Length: 204
Image (cartoon, rainbow, N blue to C red; front, top):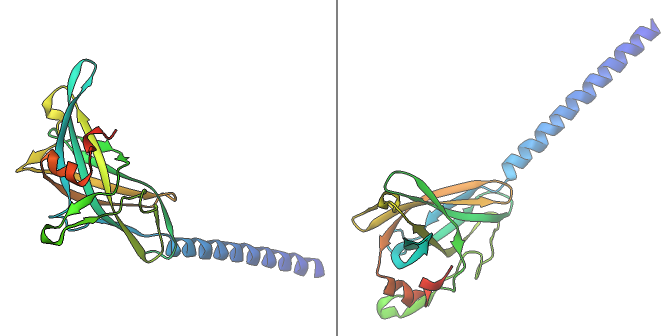
């Protein structure tokens, strides 16, 4: 009889330990989900600061290439309870045939943007003049520059309507959390981009 009771006690204790382990694991998982970075990305003054422009022709396999530059000014917000270290902020550009072309950000100097009668202002660059870390319940702002190059059939060109091109910026942190936003770029002359970033046409 005592042996049966002892076995029942061992079974009860084992079951209790298993339940507590599961509860503890679920609690840790819930804490991790609750506290993880929650990223939001959005354009700053979307009708003012987002631009694209023609760049000089290039060459690829003895063919002329069509080049475009894209300047985006964005906010990256972290509404989570844990700091986020950013891994990438790539842009995906819509083309005439409906494809999506990935563009990586290039290193630039801080843009100096004319402000009319107020003179001009120097702006931060993501990952250069501002680090790529967004603290919990905080945000960072900065410019990102992308270059897109096309050759062959012009159907592969960026989709441009009424002087506007559309892309999507996807922000990702080192833990795999992602956020994205659609950006509409307004076309400006290359000379205007050169005023903000001298020799931008030479950046590779």
